[in-house]
Length: 531
Image (cartoon, rainbow, N blue to C red; front, side):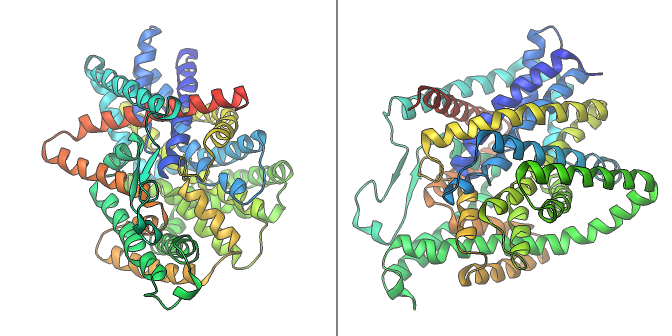
């Protein structure tokens, strides 16, 4: 049974989590599992209101963590509409979030028995959350630590963004160095990137930074200074990045995600679908009927052709499954990668208008994000004996309420910082806009795709998972983002040797939350003032 207290706390925190996650997603191109932080904050607030049973904590935490991955799906995709020179309203952003979020939750619920009960996948953050709940937070020490660093990071953001006592980025251009003509190096002055790198770890951030080195220290200078065969057509660094290295990096990501889907995802889909239909054929038919009605409503409200909507629904189920599986095994959710990969497959056969393509991709991306998030929650719930039905209801309510807030949050951030600028680089949205402006697959993107396929096959053979995706991100993301992220990864390695990883995780969670929350708060204030 849902208590009003648990739902109120969960919904309130979900909006807060959505705000700082949207900021982090646009700032560093990544949103980190919010489930532990959300659960600790839920635990603290519930105790203030006289509650705090395990059932209440897991319900509130489930609702609260929704905002993180819902915001990620929006920030990774929807800004590409603005970057393509088009407009999208607050209501449209909110409805896109609602559609993708509901599909992700609905498609994930049937996977609980498959992945949590039958396969017993670990879902590390969900398992860690269960341990936090069982321990009762040891007197609230973890929560106090998070809130302390939340406050410090918020103060840092005020000093930088409101008082302007610190620059937002330092690089070769800002230092007016001659080498800036062909080389790139520098760092964003942000705790979000550093903390994010700590949470990701040294291996993934190391491969990411390797991609940045290959792109910004080798390929781009070679093209600019005449060491490449196409140097005559690439007179400066901007042209080299936009024409060669960025689309090549995007291609690596797309090729890697397609290879992973074909060799790891498809083989697992068929037996799962067969078992589900055999268990309840009538339920399967009911689901198909409900999806058909949903397709009609989505087509009308989002101004999409019916076949595009049906394809989006099919794709949403596919990416939800893959995201849920990867989250369970690797504790990551490359949600935007699968969405862009499916978009490119569609664009091989039909031409989509930029706005339609972004909406299509956004629905897939959000669905994948919500699948990973909800499965982490369900894993935690299964370990502490919570009701899956109560978690499902809390997740649905949170999607509805948080979606309504996300349109306003995104507009405020764009109005204040300009999405796509050095303050909010939005690497995924920039990549998506680049694909659309190129009209689909260009030669550098095709070569990158081929490289991504080969690298992923080698990676799977050697048991290295999806590391080629990290390489691709490094190839196209700004090096000012990659450098502090890698530094954070190195800090994680140092903390591991000294046994300080758990403490570091709490500090990192507080830093991301504090800077992101204040960044969004300043954006909303500026929007309301009309600045």
